[in-house]
Image: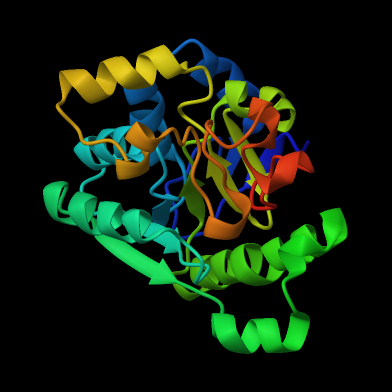
Length: 243
């Protein structure tokens, strides 16, 4: 990992134009979530944005960030295959939290996509990864470029997957900073925050969905014998965005 990373001329400047990632990560580890967000909002280069899948616990991070950085652009990637409840939940939170929601999607419609590629999610790990690149990763990168984003806040947590266990609080990825203020939060922390602030959960939570993505690769706890099979048929855990 790079240690000292130059920041853009129009960004907030520290260390004479550099952010020392080693020093920053050490400092962030001893802070609260709110203090992490505040520090990065001050030190990281503008423009800022956050991403949200509008999944099961998304209201927590959306509420936290918008308390500290009101009006921060919220990027949602619409694959064209989301649950109707996810669209409804996004609309609910947009109004409740006064979000500056930016919805981005692949330029190829779902129907045209399938006519060209077939149902890639049925074609093993390679097919799932190709699908994720086209429907999720590429539209996100396009959104970040179009909005001139230099710092991206993400709500990933270490207990979500093996890959995320090793993430740092802030990384330099694809020429921009990526910040993970919630890394050390547990499911219990999320539930307590939801209850304290009376935030709504995703409608599919009550139907046994512990994680929500696309309709064709998401299962409820009632449909699987192994919780590892809730997403992508158990073949993988990451959608490519955080890899």
